[in-house]
Length: 285
Image 1 (cartoon, rainbow, N blue to C red):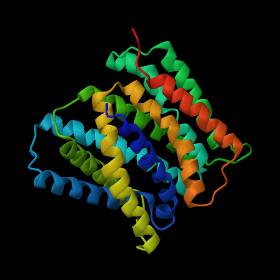
Image 2: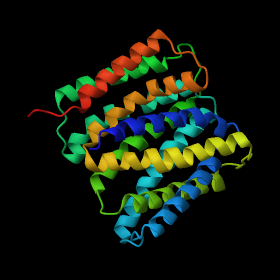
Image 3: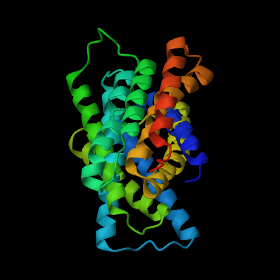
Image 4: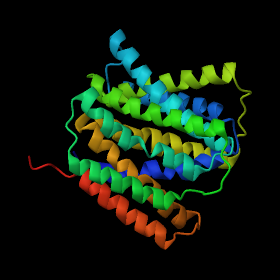
C-alpha cells in the first residue's frame, strides 16, 4: 500500500462533511446526488476513453459494479443526506455511520475469510471511542425516527458494499469500475426522485462550489483511493481509517469555518489515531 494514500483519503473524505450542508440547503438530497453522480459517471467515462481503457465488460462484472454503486452512492449516501436534510444532527449521523469498522471487523472473517486479530479489535474500540468524543452524543436531543432509521440503513449499506467490493475483486480498471458504480448510484437516485420526491435544485454559487468539491475531490479523488485500498488490503484494516474522519472533519471545520476545537476534540483525535495505528499495523505472525 502506498502509505500516503490513506492520509489523502482521510482529508478528502472528511472535507465532504463541510460541503454536504450547503448542498442540502439548496436542493432535494436525492436530486443533488443524481446530479452529482451523472457528472461523476461522465467524468470517468471520458477519462476511460482518453486512457484507452476497455469499457465493455461481461454482464457479471457490469451487474456487480452497478450493485456496488447502488450500495455506496445510492443507499449509503442517500441515507446520510436524507437524514441530515430532515433534521438529524450531523454528529449523531456520523457517529452511527462510524460503527462501520466494527461491523466490518465482525463480518470480515465469516464472509471474506479474513483473520481479525485481537489487537485489531482493541484498535477498533479505541477508534470508535475517540470518534465518539469528537462527535459528542447530543444528550437530550430529540431525534427524528426516520432519520435514525435512514442512518442505520446507510451504515448497513456501506458495510455491505465494502465487503461486497472486496469479495468480487473483478479485473476492471478503477476508472471503468468507478464509472459503472456512479451509473448505478445515479439511476438509484433518479428512481427515488421519480417515485417519492418533488426534486429541485437551486443553482446558487454556494451549491455549485460545494457540488464541484464533492464531484472532483470526493468522488474522483477520495472514492478512487478507497477502491484502491479495498482492493489491495484487507477490508477490516481499510475501514479502520474511517475512525479518523470525524476528528479530521472537526479540524477542517476549525480551520475553514471558525468552529470551536475543544480539548475534548483533541483528546478524541489522539485516541482515535492510536486506535487506527493499532488496528492497521502489520502483524508479526
